[in-house]
Image 1 (cartoon, rainbow, N blue to C red):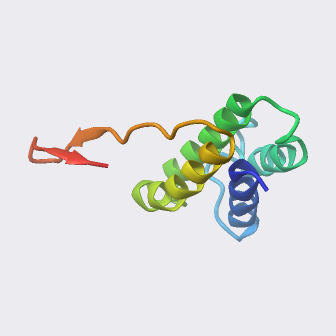
Image 2: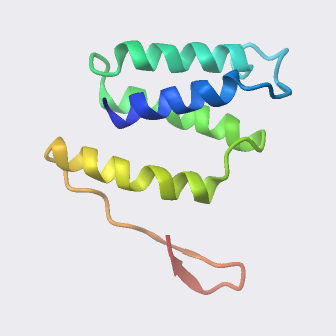
Length: 110
């Protein structure tokens, strides 16, 4: 399984849980559409370009985070090792971790 497939299944299961859908009237952001996107990723992740599935996963993550269904730091901690392992399997060097500023303005490693 690809990292994208694992995540699409993870997010699909999260969306199947009983959560209020604040975007129910917005077709591209409602839970039903996100579930459909997850299912298409699962069906096509090996046939689609890697960057396409990455964009779809990022879109789903953004909507889930905006709804408070994902914690961004926790998801980063969960997904980073998975993606680094996949990069290595694909013969791609994992990207360098970037620094960002803490709330106090000091640099921190993420």
